[in-house]
Length: 435
Ligand SMILES: C[S@@+](CC[C@H](N)C(=O)[O-])C[C@H]1O[C@@H](n2cnc3c(N)ncnc32)[C@H](O)[C@@H]1O
Image (cartoon, rainbow, N blue to C red; front, side, top):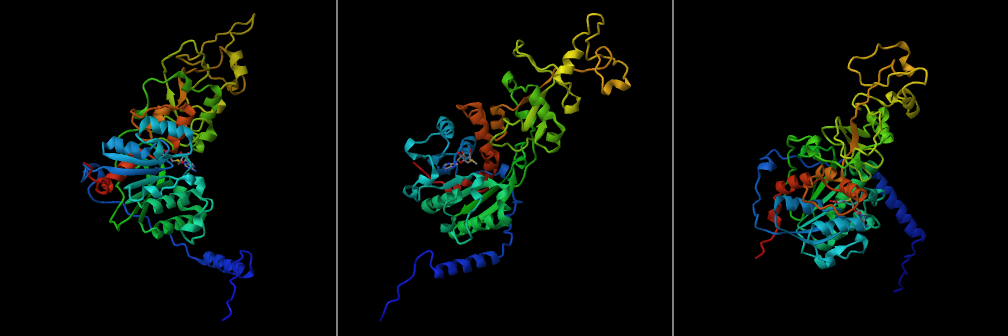
């Protein structure tokens, strides 16, 4: 019998035709929204106890950053062992090694070069939040292999190679709507294809004790079919103010340009900035460097360094918009004390105001118009405060520059949400007893 030679050339007409059919089928697939897993109405997780506190939980983390899950275990005082962790950013490694116990051999740098097969069966809980830019093209819903080339694929590959009892995949909320929900479908299907019972829900950290509006998807995969509902929200006991440091270095105070930017109508309308908010805006990787984010107003800041010069015209920023600031030139003139022949009073902040004049909107005349110079100052949040607002206690050692610390804090997972999840799923059940 004559054998027919198979045409396996990628550019052959046959293959092209098959590809076209597959593409069409994909376009026709329906993307029904996958329902989020419910919130528990059982005993609140806060009052729940771990069933096996003597067990050691073996942790593997990917895109480890500053180790939010590791810090959550520390805060809970749970026994755990870090099996592996890794991050491509050398500064993350610095922070990680200063704060957690891990063997150099178990640290990897680029996940794409990390062969996790040797850890098969050694991980109870695998945690990671892949950078969100990884989702521009996650695949065509053709399964695991199709997602190659994305950082999500690397996460899924490590799940496949290590087979953890549970995994947590954390990400930005926007992931659910990306490409009309198709991306999330692909991710969800791939986790199921790997044999996991998949749950997911968007949680906001301000519902779990941290005054920060930070919504993230928390996707859990259980190797065994599991009844699981997400932890119920709790009342917020503290506002952002409670997380501030008592003493702050003067380097965190803004100069005139920053103050104008931060207090500008546009920024405040668009919620790019917030001053003295009760609940922090979501921290970002580049927070505090583009004058976006949260700021603190000190009405009567103690002058830690009296020699340092601060801007003269700083108003109560709660009420004053940019347009009310005097330009540097006008301010200089107004407070100059007049000319040689015509002396004026440079007094500002009068208890009883001078009569308000019709012309005051355009003319600036010292001794005639009213000016206030609140000696208050606006400052940005310190790296320590940013860490606190991500749920990191002050036991966390800062060993990198301010710039790196802001980035790392803004990238992290909120520790208090992790604590709620760990309690809700009773993570100790997945650990093992070690003598
Ligand atoms: C959104 S952050 C996750 C931070 C972490 N969840 C935490 O608790 O701090 C993503 C992290 O992935 C790291 N990353 C990006 N590409 C990587 C790669 N190819 N291999 C390993 N880590 C990578 C980044 O440096 C960043 O720290």
